[in-house]
Length: 246
Image 1 (tube, one colour):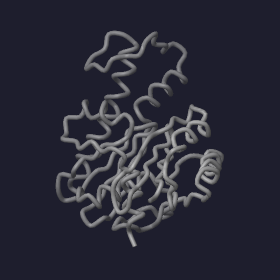
Image 2: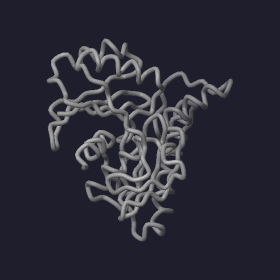
Image 3: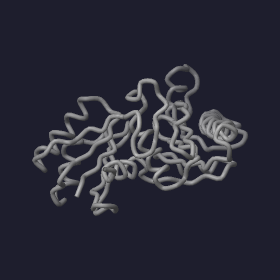
């Protein structure tokens, strides 16, 4: 069995994979917690994995902390997956393949393996990521923007008088600052997703399946006028495909 790690900007998500498919256990830990203590507690009763495969978009200090826990509990070192030019039927369009976030690549691997291409793969988390994937596995490219919550925080940090006293509601028209900030940022994210998906249809030759994952996916999906398929644990599922590919 394998321990799979999705080390994102906000959380570390993990799953214990029973080969060839399926999770024996899974969970998530927020980076704001004491990561060492939280992982030791979460993994204390797990069967010892044969291998640990990790996809990371965090800094080397956090990677080292997680690696230390793995070595102490399981007596092995994690294998760090770095973004390739081609793998599992997906071809990376980046001229420097390693500069494409491994989380984005693996989400496309999962979508391709599950038969959803041609598609647009969107991730709504700290960042809002968008990628177009053709039926043959060719990545056409993508976009990155701040996620809705990061947009709101950036606005508050850059202004002197935008100081909502409460979390805002998402409305079509707001009559107060709190709702105006929340509504503007969430609707901006929704508009970008819809625009990207619409603009990609001619390039993909068909209306693409819109796949939306990430911590804010469900809330963002409720604002979209396009059909959307919610995706859970796309990075971990992509890791599982990677691990099972000869």
